[in-house]
Image 1 (cartoon, rainbow, N blue to C red):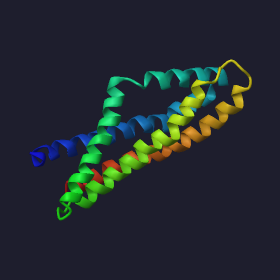
Image 2 (cartoon, helix red, strand yellow; image 1 turned 90 degrees about the vertical axis):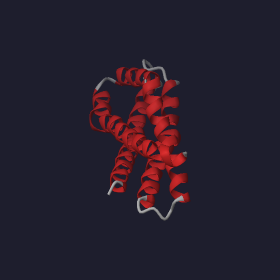
Image 3 (cartoon, one colour; image 1 turned 180 degrees about the horizontal axis):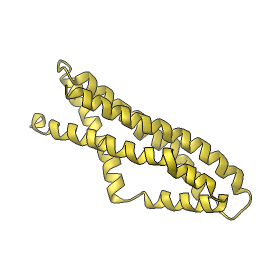
Image 4 (cartoon, rainbow, N blue to C red; image 1 turned 135 degrees about the vertical axis):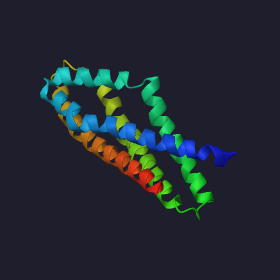
Amino acid sequence: MIEQIIPYVFFLAALGSGLIAGVFFAFSSFVMTALAKLPAKNGIAAMQSINITVLNKSFLTVFMGTALATALLIVHSILNIENTNAFYLITGSLFYLIGSFLVTILGNVPLNDALARVRSEEETSVPLWKNYLSKWSRWNHIRTLASLVALAFFIFALS
């Protein structure tokens, strides 16, 4: 039974990694730069709105669903380690789980939670915003690259 669904799990993990890499890439390449150019109070308010809006069914389904798919691929690949693509599936899955999923949970989400408590119109928010931009973007670059590398390993697994 499990053997029959693994190709679909593999497909969903690859597709999800690519979609998430694209979302994170957008933030790394232009969204955060645009927010940084706004007055601090406007950038903070915009990011606070983004952080609320991102918690929707479509994003969470892809983000969490990909994490679940990669966890299943790891278990399946370990149990079938003799398969030629097991190394690629495990490696790609670990890149997504650690570099995308865990980095989000341990790096970006705590920063988002701290930003949610800030009043954007207060002057004391300016240094926090600059620190947020730097740290959040650094973590985002890591998860962008990790999601993209995960996708690359899933593609390698096809050969």
